[in-house]
Length: 337
Ligand code: CDT
Image (cartoon, rainbow, N blue to C red; front, side):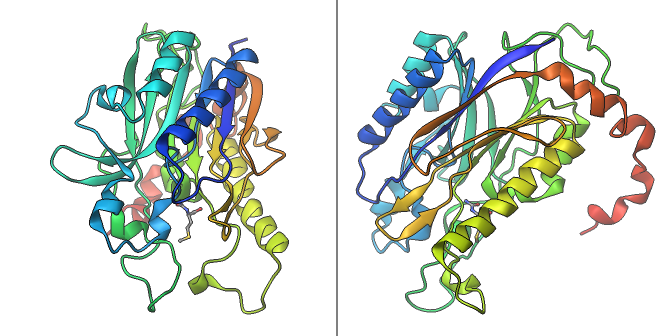
């Protein structure tokens, strides 16, 4: 067996005027709780340090910029004074963390980004920039409270590059065949996705093709339908949440199954500013598509599981043995422009 102890650190309501410091201190509490359960890897949500700001149309550009972290590449996010205490804690505890944030590059570009930070080496070892940026550039009518991610983020330009996490768990499985990987790199093969990406099979398959055993996802998903997506028949808040949770689970479960990988999803949830409802449902899903642990609240909560990456072998060697069963010569339409 290749056992690894993992956690999703779900974060409840964070308001427009919540300070970074108060959110970071909640995240450190979550990290400590996860560590006390034995977690080696802790996944935090998308845009974890602030409220989900793309829902606002800012009249003051300085306020918009205040939600971003400056990131010149390399390890800089871990050294950024706004958020350093979280990375320092991870380093101190020797645990790996994955966390999403609004990234402002040195050339002034803005991305919806996540990094994987290795607690043992104290380094950011992977960065991912959200590819499927949903929503609008402009509100469809004045005053519409809609998702404005396309206004604030560029399309991610780093592709779907799987990576190895040094020291997390040895003996990765080879992409395609599920055989032992003897290239000497050894460690678990991991991929990153951010929120809306999880709904697209096209985001998962590149990781599956690289042999991913674990896909990490941060999300902010509305329970209440945005104005523009209002259902024809008004539905209750409870029903709206249930529908949103259904599609979240469907995406995590099917794509974990179809790529024979485990997945961990961590959500920002709860009622932001008393009116923006975000679903919980942070989860750990096995490589057969079963939910093995799921959040019970819409508040700060650690979802924990001990998983055996060896289980990925089953699908990778059998029905989803890509080398044997895929027919890529027939899939051209998927990448045609
Ligand atoms: N954060 C994020 O990507 N949320 C989207 C909502 C899309 S509604 C325009 C999601 O897919 O959950």
